[in-house]
Image (tube, rainbow, N blue to C red):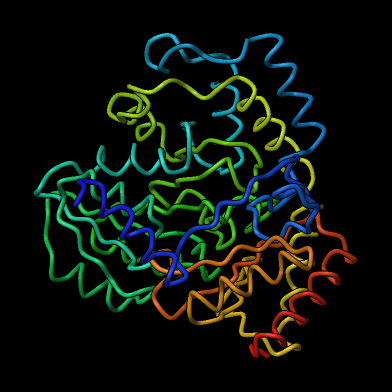
Amino acid sequence: MGKLDFITQEIEELKSSGLYNIIRVIGSSQGPWTIVDGKKVLNMCSNNYLGFAAHPDLKKKAIEAIELYGVGPAAVRSIAGTMELHNILEEKLAKFKRTEAALSLQAGLIANLSTIPALVPSQEDIIFSDELNHASIIDGIRLSKAKRVIYKHLDMNSLENALKENEGRRKLIISDGVFSMDGDVAPLPDLVVLAEKYDALLMVDDAHGEGVLGSHGRGIANHFGLDGKVDVEIGTLSKAFGVVGGFVAGSKKLIEFLKQKARPFLFSSATTPADVAAVIAAVDILENDDTLVKKLWDNAKYFKEKMKDAGFDTGRSKTPITPVMLGEAKRAQEFSKKLFKEGIFAQSIGYPTVPKGKARIRVMISAAHSKEDIEFALEKFTKAGKQLGVI
């Protein structure tokens, strides 16, 4: 046997189980209708919640930034890579999130990898993490030497018992704000109470909350009227904001600390001028107008109601994320293929992204979708559902 034969074997196992990831190729800007593998299809699975990925104002500002600042920063932030644009963005993000300060980073994943090991680096520290937290949180936890305790999903009794039973030098509670696969929302008021009661830091990854929850899409803290009550807010700039990047929002002391301790900030080049300028434009739009946020929720409500009426199981989502539950991975993959033939781009999701037996099509509704787009999607989902015996 060759030393790489295990790769061939594992790939074949993925294919036979329906878990092989089919990576389709995008041939246009991300819009409601997108060119995928050379075919024009209705895009129902990108994170482009507000349609910002191809917004004319964002494109204009990105081009202007390239003309003024060039295409790249050519350095890490701590040496020669902090541009005026980075500071402008961070001031606007802090204002938008209603925190004292913010730090922009290269990705939402990078924000978690930057923050968790810096805050709780020691074996004497303890992390309390929701069992369904995103992979980027899990990877951030793995980079820390802290003890980790996993509590049951959204179960505050489970979390409180864990806090009672475990003592450490520093305690950090971590939860997604909106859980990306099911679309359910963390009980933030209860998390805040427990963090204060047990003298623990509270960190929330609001990747799917920004641009979605709260006034003008400010996120989960604003949604619950808890601005400033979360010690560490992690965000992404590659979903509702339509660009790429991540950030940390919190106190001035926290941000000063991370500028000294966060390894990706210290050892990886800064985000490009075009990306930063485009995000600034997105934040400005949201600060001034919440029309797109309202349209997103209107579209989501209509799609969910009609899918339930058709007989589909759309899980426990309380946000525009709409899981179409199908069970086995092979079935979900076949459903996705049928949709694509009918002009719908909606990828199947299976293990390990979701538990075994809970494969699905995760539909991501956008403010950019028209009523006609949604009606088209409903027709094709219903057709595929009947062909596969789902409904």
